[in-house]
Image 1 (cartoon, rainbow, N blue to C red):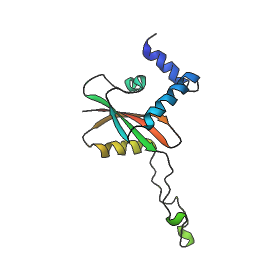
Image 2: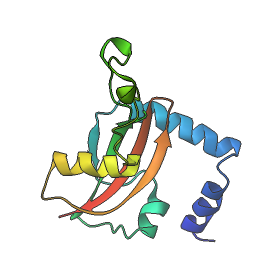
Image 3: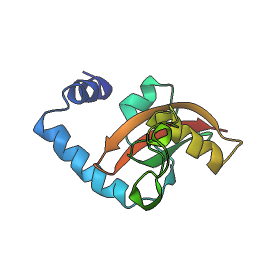
Image 4: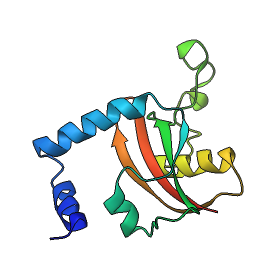
Length: 136
């Protein structure tokens, strides 16, 4: 069997002890990174190859760290003042998922980067990590 097929089979069963340990070790490394970090090679090579990654000098990987939170509107002093019509905190909610947030972070980081694909890497109770395949 090829190396990639073995890795694919391992990642399909994420509940196994081996994968859980790998994810924990990676999570500790990822927590120390900045919001956007540039790498030459992807952390999940099988997934990157599936999405079209090639081992060229033009390809690189960005790891994006995003805070996990609901899109609630911030209220002054922790409570909403005023009439009954304005009592909801979730009224003006941006319907955007965490993957799209990661894309926005990357576009803010550099406008001339072309993004091939983006996928989930790991998550914590505070953060979600995504890996973006980019090229020049």
